[in-house]
Amino acid sequence: MLQDLVAPETAGDPMSEQKWMRSSLRQLSTRLKEAGHLASPPTVGRLLDDLGYALHVNAKKLEASAAHTDRNEQFEYIATQRQAFAAAGLPIISVDTKKKELIGNFKNAGQAWGQEAEAVNVHDFLNDAAGRAVPYGIYDLTHNRGTVYVGSSADTPQFAVDVIAGWWESSGRVAFPQADQLLILADAGGSNGCRVRLWKQQLQEQLSDRFGLTVTVCHYPTGCSKWNPIEHRLFSHISLNWAGKPLRTWEIMLAYLRGTTTSTGLEVKALLWQSMYATGQSVSDTDMQTLYLERHAVCPNWNYTIRPRPTDTFSGAADSTSREVIV
Image (cartoon, rainbow, N blue to C red; front, side, top):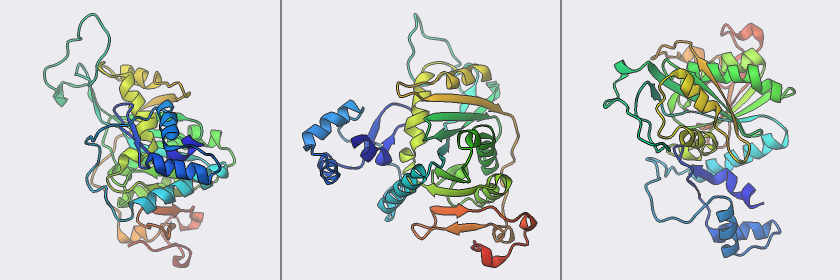
């Protein structure tokens, strides 16, 4: 019961196993009592310690712009959406781009056991690298499964949606054969940001229209990316697995990704994604008006649903009464 209470408000460092949450022990004790479970604040503290939480002094963990006025309302709304999709047996994925990595004889942060330190390049110059890896992660909350697509081009909205579509085609619809809806949890910025038009347009074309999926997207508030589940349920474990080990080749990087496991049963698939993507692409107002996008009543800039368009409207001649016009 306690784990269910703290899971929606847990944040974590994607580079370590550190986790923290928003509620105090007294608040958690009160909520447990309301649910019919008596537990004093000290007892809650001991239970949290068993779950991997700890009491710490102040540390620099707050991100810039995190104090948005709608922050708590959005956290509560995301929790509601997750509960609704989970209860209906529908897929929920958390997505994000992990830190980009140079492939070659370069230092990798962290420590590793060995008789002596491995010698690596003094400088991290891109022209000395075999390439720069762009790992885009997809975490299936229902099955505790991660998939990382390692790109070698630009981190663009097209790349993000292409790999999500690839995941759905190869894994998602196999795990959820009856599903016609998908919930995506994403950060407010980056290639899958809440204000990125190309992200929405690609979701419409490559995911919703292509597979007949109704896609709901909930963005974490600005500056709150560490609360996105993929950060502490997938990325942190990957960082620990390859800590202090140079990623000298693409194959080595993929091997470390695939070898990431946890005591709770996490499994990770990793694939090399070799498509090339151009930056700077834009979507016109006219094209945006063809999307079947509905903004939610709660925090509409962060929550929206994209529905499949009839096949005869893909060219853009959509009935304006059947969708919301996005400006």
